[in-house]
Amino acid sequence: MPELPEVETVRRQLAAALPGRTVVDVDVRLARTVQNATPEELAAFVRGRAFAGVGRRGKYLLLPLQPRREGGAGDEPEQLVVHLRMTGRLTVAGAREAADPYTRVVFVLDDGRELRFADVRTFGTIHLCGPGRPAPRGLQELGPEPLDDAFTPDVLAAALRGRRAPVKAVLLDQRCVAGVGNIYADEALFAAGIHPGRAAASLTAEETALLHAALRQVLEKAIAFGGTTIRDYVNGNGAPGGFQRCLQVYGRAGEPCPHCGEPIARLRLAGRGTHFCPRCQR
DNA sequence: ATAGCGCCCTGGTGGC
DNA sequence: TGCCACCAGGGCGCTA
Image (cartoon, rainbow, N blue to C red; front, side, top):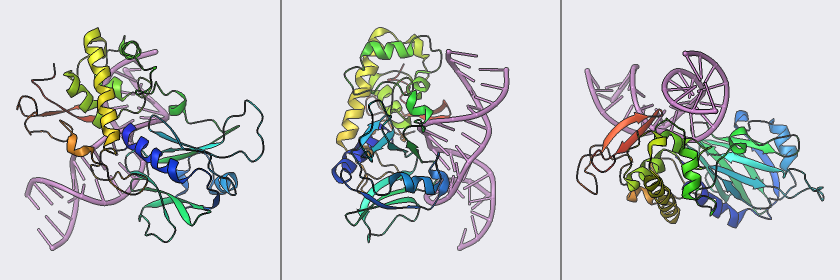
């Protein structure tokens, strides 16, 4: 499931391939993937324009387009906002290279390559953003980037304050911290020694600091490994990640805890499979 | 305002 | 071997 490290890995690769490339044509094979525009509107929006860069906010990929003419100050940047959800893949490949059978949208580029959006389960989305076309609500309400300097232990403490929901549920709330999903919530809570079911507001300042540090370390290490591939995730070049080898608890129910040997337990929290060590995490 | 749940969707898996 | 119920889950919309 693409979370922050996976999306960041994709971003870095697309950033090496897309900027300056002009979109020659668009092929929308599944119309509802493009959430707020018709295929014709999308084509009119991007055809003949070049990508200006590749950004990321949380799990959202931001693909700004070069303005058609000098835009007035204050204009919202025109960009495509892509969310991979669970099984989405955004890759750049030569036009003659074999395509994923679940390809939903293809952007034909001016250098003989294509930007391809594929998605087995069709949850992934593309939004067209600009003047009169606001960003999706989830992006507008997104919390701080966990790897930014501005994300301090105090910022995390403020997000947890007053929340009686399980701390894992709050970590999954994108308004609390951007980009944390099921895998890295479990891994960070394990690294911090905190039980995922603890009420968020019950964490001490010390525990909050541990969780803050654990979140950053887990996310940074996962980026260094190119993300986690359980089944579907591939990076911008179509290759899997490597962090699945580093997972301590996620997907390891019944296996011994790497710290104490106690079998990893599994429960359902916030509607998600949750993995933790009953002895190490209190 | 917050917490919790069902829904979307399809392929893979495990049980019989 | 075949069938089928079940599971995976991010974000959203709904309810209490």
